[in-house]
Length: 332
Ligand code: SF4
Ligand code: SF4
Image (cartoon, rainbow, N blue to C red):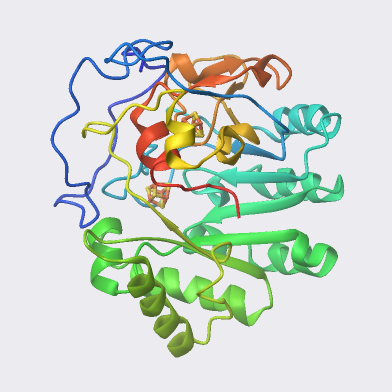
Protein backbone atom coordinates (compact mmCIF):
# COMPACT_ATOMS: atom_id res chain seq x y z
CA UNK A 1 0.00 0.00 0.00
CA UNK A 2 1.45 3.32 -1.00
CA UNK A 3 1.94 5.70 1.89
CA UNK A 4 1.35 8.60 -0.47
CA UNK A 5 -2.17 9.55 -1.30
CA UNK A 6 -3.48 11.80 -4.00
CA UNK A 7 -5.51 14.92 -3.34
CA UNK A 8 -6.98 13.85 -0.01
CA UNK A 9 -8.22 16.61 2.22
CA UNK A 10 -8.55 16.71 5.98
CA UNK A 11 -11.81 18.59 5.78
CA UNK A 12 -14.03 15.73 6.77
CA UNK A 13 -16.97 16.90 8.80
CA UNK A 14 -17.13 13.66 10.75
CA UNK A 15 -19.96 12.91 13.09
CA UNK A 16 -18.93 12.07 16.63
CA UNK A 17 -19.17 8.70 18.39
CA UNK A 18 -17.87 5.33 17.31
CA UNK A 19 -19.44 3.46 14.41
CA UNK A 20 -21.42 0.38 15.46
CA UNK A 21 -19.84 -1.35 12.44
CA UNK A 22 -16.16 -0.85 13.36
CA UNK A 23 -13.99 -3.90 12.58
CA UNK A 24 -12.71 -5.63 15.69
CA UNK A 25 -9.06 -6.59 15.06
CA UNK A 26 -5.56 -5.60 16.20
CA UNK A 27 -3.67 -2.85 14.35
CA UNK A 28 -2.18 -3.66 10.94
CA UNK A 29 1.56 -4.45 11.25
CA UNK A 30 3.56 -1.80 9.33
CA UNK A 31 5.44 -4.45 7.29
CA UNK A 32 2.25 -5.57 5.54
CA UNK A 33 1.04 -4.18 2.20
CA UNK A 34 4.28 -2.33 1.49
CA UNK A 35 5.72 -4.10 -1.59
CA UNK A 36 3.48 -4.51 -4.65
CA UNK A 37 5.15 -7.80 -5.61
CA UNK A 38 5.86 -9.46 -2.28
CA UNK A 39 4.03 -9.89 1.01
CA UNK A 40 5.68 -9.29 4.39
CA UNK A 41 6.40 -13.05 4.47
CA UNK A 42 8.20 -12.73 1.08
CA UNK A 43 5.54 -14.70 -0.75
CA UNK A 44 4.44 -13.56 -4.23
CA UNK A 45 1.50 -11.18 -3.97
CA UNK A 46 -1.66 -12.02 -5.88
CA UNK A 47 -2.87 -9.84 -8.73
CA UNK A 48 -6.09 -9.60 -10.72
CA UNK A 49 -6.19 -9.14 -14.50
CA UNK A 50 -8.94 -7.12 -16.18
CA UNK A 51 -10.97 -9.80 -17.92
CA UNK A 52 -13.70 -7.61 -19.33
CA UNK A 53 -14.80 -4.08 -18.41
CA UNK A 54 -18.40 -5.01 -17.58
CA UNK A 55 -19.01 -2.07 -15.26
CA UNK A 56 -17.52 1.37 -15.46
CA UNK A 57 -17.98 3.32 -12.25
CA UNK A 58 -18.00 7.09 -12.27
CA UNK A 59 -17.33 8.85 -9.02
CA UNK A 60 -19.52 11.93 -9.30
CA UNK A 61 -17.63 13.75 -6.48
CA UNK A 62 -17.11 13.24 -2.76
CA UNK A 63 -19.48 15.91 -1.49
CA UNK A 64 -22.34 14.34 0.43
CA UNK A 65 -25.22 15.55 2.58
CA UNK A 66 -24.09 13.05 5.25
CA UNK A 67 -20.76 12.35 6.96
CA UNK A 68 -21.09 8.68 7.92
CA UNK A 69 -18.74 7.43 10.62
CA UNK A 70 -16.89 4.89 8.46
CA UNK A 71 -17.48 6.25 4.96
CA UNK A 72 -14.56 4.65 3.09
CA UNK A 73 -14.22 7.63 0.77
CA UNK A 74 -14.50 10.15 3.63
CA UNK A 75 -17.42 11.98 2.08
CA UNK A 76 -19.04 14.87 3.88
CA UNK A 77 -20.72 18.21 3.14
CA UNK A 78 -17.23 19.78 2.90
CA UNK A 79 -14.90 17.14 1.46
CA UNK A 80 -14.40 17.81 -2.24
CA UNK A 81 -11.18 15.78 -2.58
CA UNK A 82 -12.92 14.31 -5.63
CA UNK A 83 -14.57 17.20 -7.42
CA UNK A 84 -17.82 17.02 -9.35
CA UNK A 85 -17.32 15.04 -12.54
CA UNK A 86 -18.58 16.94 -15.59
CA UNK A 87 -21.04 15.49 -18.11
CA UNK A 88 -18.46 16.17 -20.85
CA UNK A 89 -15.79 14.13 -19.11
CA UNK A 90 -18.30 11.36 -18.42
CA UNK A 91 -19.18 11.34 -22.13
CA UNK A 92 -15.53 10.83 -23.09
CA UNK A 93 -15.36 7.72 -20.93
CA UNK A 94 -18.73 6.45 -22.20
CA UNK A 95 -17.33 6.64 -25.71
CA UNK A 96 -14.30 4.60 -24.76
CA UNK A 97 -16.38 2.09 -22.75
CA UNK A 98 -18.73 1.55 -25.70
CA UNK A 99 -15.74 0.34 -27.68
CA UNK A 100 -14.87 -2.12 -24.90
CA UNK A 101 -18.29 -3.79 -24.65
CA UNK A 102 -19.17 -2.31 -21.25
CA UNK A 103 -22.73 -3.10 -20.17
CA UNK A 104 -23.25 -1.02 -17.08
CA UNK A 105 -22.33 2.42 -15.77
CA UNK A 106 -22.28 2.66 -11.97
CA UNK A 107 -22.53 6.03 -10.26
CA UNK A 108 -21.21 6.59 -6.78
CA UNK A 109 -20.11 9.55 -4.67
CA UNK A 110 -20.50 11.15 -2.22
CA UNK A 111 -24.13 11.54 -3.07
CA UNK A 112 -24.46 11.53 -6.89
CA UNK A 113 -27.63 13.64 -6.86
CA UNK A 114 -25.66 16.56 -5.39
CA UNK A 115 -23.64 16.93 -8.60
CA UNK A 116 -25.48 19.50 -10.78
CA UNK A 117 -24.46 17.58 -13.93
CA UNK A 118 -25.66 14.24 -12.60
CA UNK A 119 -29.03 14.01 -14.36
CA UNK A 120 -27.54 14.90 -17.79
CA UNK A 121 -24.73 12.35 -17.34
CA UNK A 122 -27.17 9.64 -16.18
CA UNK A 123 -29.48 10.35 -19.11
CA UNK A 124 -26.55 10.25 -21.55
CA UNK A 125 -25.50 6.82 -20.22
CA UNK A 126 -29.03 5.41 -20.59
CA UNK A 127 -29.49 6.93 -24.05
CA UNK A 128 -26.30 5.23 -25.19
CA UNK A 129 -27.83 1.89 -24.17
CA UNK A 130 -25.92 1.25 -20.95
CA UNK A 131 -27.63 -0.04 -17.86
CA UNK A 132 -27.23 2.40 -14.99
CA UNK A 133 -26.75 1.66 -11.30
CA UNK A 134 -26.96 4.67 -8.98
CA UNK A 135 -25.81 4.43 -5.36
CA UNK A 136 -27.72 6.93 -3.25
CA UNK A 137 -28.83 7.58 0.29
CA UNK A 138 -32.31 8.44 -1.12
CA UNK A 139 -32.50 11.58 0.98
CA UNK A 140 -33.24 15.18 -0.03
CA UNK A 141 -30.69 15.48 -2.87
CA UNK A 142 -32.45 12.59 -4.65
CA UNK A 143 -35.96 13.76 -3.78
CA UNK A 144 -35.32 17.10 -5.50
CA UNK A 145 -35.20 15.16 -8.78
CA UNK A 146 -38.38 13.10 -8.44
CA UNK A 147 -39.90 14.37 -11.68
CA UNK A 148 -36.78 13.77 -13.74
CA UNK A 149 -36.42 10.30 -12.22
CA UNK A 150 -40.01 9.41 -13.12
CA UNK A 151 -39.30 10.43 -16.72
CA UNK A 152 -36.20 8.20 -16.79
CA UNK A 153 -38.21 5.33 -15.28
CA UNK A 154 -40.81 5.79 -18.03
CA UNK A 155 -38.19 5.92 -20.79
CA UNK A 156 -35.75 3.27 -19.66
CA UNK A 157 -37.64 0.99 -17.22
CA UNK A 158 -35.46 -1.48 -15.36
CA UNK A 159 -32.30 -0.38 -17.16
CA UNK A 160 -32.06 2.15 -14.34
CA UNK A 161 -31.48 0.71 -10.84
CA UNK A 162 -31.12 2.77 -7.68
CA UNK A 163 -29.32 1.13 -4.79
CA UNK A 164 -30.11 2.75 -1.48
CA UNK A 165 -27.70 2.57 1.43
CA UNK A 166 -29.64 1.52 4.49
CA UNK A 167 -26.80 0.54 6.74
CA UNK A 168 -28.84 -1.59 9.08
CA UNK A 169 -32.38 -2.88 9.42
CA UNK A 170 -32.76 -1.02 12.69
CA UNK A 171 -32.91 2.71 13.22
CA UNK A 172 -30.27 2.49 15.98
CA UNK A 173 -27.77 0.66 13.76
CA UNK A 174 -28.38 2.94 10.78
CA UNK A 175 -28.23 6.20 12.72
CA UNK A 176 -25.26 5.00 14.79
CA UNK A 177 -23.32 5.09 11.53
CA UNK A 178 -25.10 7.84 9.59
CA UNK A 179 -26.08 10.32 12.26
CA UNK A 180 -29.38 11.46 13.73
CA UNK A 181 -32.44 12.04 11.55
CA UNK A 182 -31.11 9.88 8.71
CA UNK A 183 -33.36 6.83 9.20
CA UNK A 184 -36.90 8.07 8.50
CA UNK A 185 -35.77 10.31 5.64
CA UNK A 186 -33.77 7.56 3.93
CA UNK A 187 -36.53 5.01 4.45
CA UNK A 188 -39.07 7.44 3.02
CA UNK A 189 -36.93 7.86 -0.10
CA UNK A 190 -36.67 4.09 -0.51
CA UNK A 191 -40.44 3.76 -0.08
CA UNK A 192 -41.00 6.43 -2.73
CA UNK A 193 -38.80 4.54 -5.22
CA UNK A 194 -40.57 1.27 -4.47
CA UNK A 195 -44.06 2.76 -4.75
CA UNK A 196 -43.18 4.24 -8.14
CA UNK A 197 -41.98 0.95 -9.55
CA UNK A 198 -38.25 1.67 -9.84
CA UNK A 199 -35.78 -1.17 -10.04
CA UNK A 200 -34.29 -0.92 -6.56
CA UNK A 201 -31.74 -2.56 -4.30
CA UNK A 202 -30.52 -1.93 -0.78
CA UNK A 203 -26.94 -1.95 0.49
CA UNK A 204 -26.62 -2.89 4.14
CA UNK A 205 -24.03 -4.08 6.61
CA UNK A 206 -23.65 -6.62 9.37
CA UNK A 207 -23.12 -5.56 12.97
CA UNK A 208 -20.23 -7.34 14.73
CA UNK A 209 -21.46 -10.84 15.54
CA UNK A 210 -24.55 -10.55 13.36
CA UNK A 211 -24.88 -13.46 10.93
CA UNK A 212 -26.05 -13.23 7.34
CA UNK A 213 -29.36 -15.14 7.92
CA UNK A 214 -30.14 -12.96 10.92
CA UNK A 215 -29.48 -9.78 8.93
CA UNK A 216 -31.57 -10.96 5.96
CA UNK A 217 -34.42 -11.83 8.35
CA UNK A 218 -34.17 -8.36 9.89
CA UNK A 219 -34.36 -6.67 6.49
CA UNK A 220 -37.18 -9.02 5.42
CA UNK A 221 -39.28 -7.85 8.38
CA UNK A 222 -38.46 -4.21 7.61
CA UNK A 223 -39.32 -4.51 3.90
CA UNK A 224 -42.62 -6.23 4.76
CA UNK A 225 -43.56 -3.63 7.33
CA UNK A 226 -42.69 -0.72 5.03
CA UNK A 227 -44.09 -2.27 1.83
CA UNK A 228 -40.73 -2.24 0.04
CA UNK A 229 -40.63 -4.47 -3.03
CA UNK A 230 -37.25 -6.15 -2.53
CA UNK A 231 -36.60 -9.87 -2.14
CA UNK A 232 -34.38 -9.95 0.97
CA UNK A 233 -32.94 -13.33 -0.01
CA UNK A 234 -31.70 -12.07 -3.39
CA UNK A 235 -28.01 -11.11 -2.91
CA UNK A 236 -28.15 -8.69 -5.86
CA UNK A 237 -31.14 -6.84 -4.36
CA UNK A 238 -30.07 -6.86 -0.74
CA UNK A 239 -26.29 -6.50 -0.84
CA UNK A 240 -24.68 -7.00 2.57
CA UNK A 241 -21.12 -5.71 2.75
CA UNK A 242 -18.29 -6.88 4.98
CA UNK A 243 -16.43 -4.31 7.00
CA UNK A 244 -13.55 -2.21 5.70
CA UNK A 245 -10.87 -0.79 7.94
CA UNK A 246 -7.43 -0.30 6.45
CA UNK A 247 -5.86 0.26 9.87
CA UNK A 248 -6.76 -3.20 11.21
CA UNK A 249 -4.74 -6.39 10.73
CA UNK A 250 -5.69 -8.75 7.93
CA UNK A 251 -3.89 -11.50 5.99
CA UNK A 252 -2.13 -10.53 2.76
CA UNK A 253 -3.27 -12.33 -0.38
CA UNK A 254 -0.62 -14.46 -2.10
CA UNK A 255 -0.79 -16.26 -5.44
CA UNK A 256 -1.38 -19.46 -3.43
CA UNK A 257 -4.51 -18.08 -1.75
CA UNK A 258 -6.82 -18.64 -4.72
CA UNK A 259 -6.58 -22.43 -4.47
CA UNK A 260 -6.71 -22.44 -0.68
CA UNK A 261 -9.84 -20.27 -0.66
CA UNK A 262 -11.41 -21.92 -3.70
CA UNK A 263 -11.71 -18.52 -5.39
CA UNK A 264 -10.65 -17.16 -8.73
CA UNK A 265 -9.22 -13.75 -9.62
CA UNK A 266 -12.15 -13.55 -12.06
CA UNK A 267 -14.55 -13.25 -9.07
CA UNK A 268 -12.93 -10.05 -7.84
CA UNK A 269 -14.42 -6.66 -8.66
CA UNK A 270 -11.33 -5.27 -10.42
CA UNK A 271 -11.48 -8.18 -12.92
CA UNK A 272 -14.56 -6.57 -14.42
CA UNK A 273 -14.64 -2.91 -13.41
CA UNK A 274 -12.76 0.36 -13.06
CA UNK A 275 -13.67 3.75 -11.58
CA UNK A 276 -13.22 7.24 -12.99
CA UNK A 277 -12.29 9.87 -10.39
CA UNK A 278 -11.61 13.58 -10.81
CA UNK A 279 -9.23 14.60 -8.03
CA UNK A 280 -9.16 18.18 -6.84
CA UNK A 281 -6.32 20.14 -8.44
CA UNK A 282 -6.01 17.79 -11.43
CA UNK A 283 -6.95 18.99 -14.88
CA UNK A 284 -8.96 15.97 -15.88
CA UNK A 285 -10.28 12.71 -14.44
CA UNK A 286 -8.22 9.55 -14.13
CA UNK A 287 -8.98 5.87 -13.83
CA UNK A 288 -8.62 4.05 -10.51
CA UNK A 289 -8.57 0.29 -10.08
CA UNK A 290 -11.88 0.16 -8.28
CA UNK A 291 -14.45 2.04 -6.23
CA UNK A 292 -12.73 1.31 -2.93
CA UNK A 293 -9.30 2.94 -3.31
CA UNK A 294 -9.73 6.32 -4.97
CA UNK A 295 -6.81 8.22 -3.45
CA UNK A 296 -3.85 5.80 -3.50
CA UNK A 297 -1.28 6.40 -6.27
CA UNK A 298 -0.57 2.73 -6.59
CA UNK A 299 -4.18 2.10 -7.61
CA UNK A 300 -4.26 5.00 -10.07
CA UNK A 301 -4.00 3.12 -13.34
CA UNK A 302 -3.98 5.83 -15.99
CA UNK A 303 -5.64 8.50 -18.04
CA UNK A 304 -7.85 6.32 -20.21
CA UNK A 305 -9.63 2.98 -19.84
CA UNK A 306 -7.19 1.41 -22.30
CA UNK A 307 -4.24 2.57 -20.22
CA UNK A 308 -5.94 1.28 -17.06
CA UNK A 309 -6.47 -2.24 -18.39
CA UNK A 310 -3.39 -3.85 -16.85
CA UNK A 311 -3.55 -6.25 -13.86
CA UNK A 312 -3.99 -4.90 -10.34
CA UNK A 313 -1.66 -6.04 -7.56
CA UNK A 314 -3.62 -6.67 -4.38
CA UNK A 315 -1.47 -4.47 -2.21
CA UNK A 316 -4.10 -2.90 0.04
CA UNK A 317 -5.96 -4.16 3.14
CA UNK A 318 -9.29 -3.56 1.34
CA UNK A 319 -8.22 -6.10 -1.31
CA UNK A 320 -7.93 -8.70 1.43
CA UNK A 321 -10.67 -7.84 3.92
CA UNK A 322 -13.39 -6.63 1.57
CA UNK A 323 -12.78 -8.36 -1.75
CA UNK A 324 -10.97 -11.66 -1.31
CA UNK A 325 -11.79 -12.70 2.24
CA UNK A 326 -15.10 -10.83 2.59
CA UNK A 327 -16.23 -12.01 -0.82
CA UNK A 328 -17.99 -8.77 -1.69
CA UNK A 329 -18.67 -7.20 -5.04
CA UNK A 330 -19.80 -3.63 -5.50
CA UNK A 331 -21.90 -4.35 -8.58
CA UNK A 332 -25.59 -5.29 -8.35
S1 SF4 B 1 -24.02 8.58 2.42
FE1 SF4 B 1 -22.46 7.27 1.44
S2 SF4 B 1 -21.02 8.71 0.50
FE2 SF4 B 1 -22.27 9.90 1.95
S3 SF4 B 1 -21.01 9.91 3.83
FE3 SF4 B 1 -22.45 8.18 3.97
S4 SF4 B 1 -21.32 6.38 3.17
FE4 SF4 B 1 -20.23 8.26 2.53
S1 SF4 C 1 -9.95 -3.40 -3.27
FE1 SF4 C 1 -10.78 -5.14 -4.39
S2 SF4 C 1 -11.46 -4.36 -6.35
FE2 SF4 C 1 -10.09 -2.84 -5.40
S3 SF4 C 1 -8.07 -3.27 -6.24
FE3 SF4 C 1 -8.25 -4.39 -4.32
S4 SF4 C 1 -9.03 -6.44 -4.92
FE4 SF4 C 1 -9.35 -5.07 -6.63
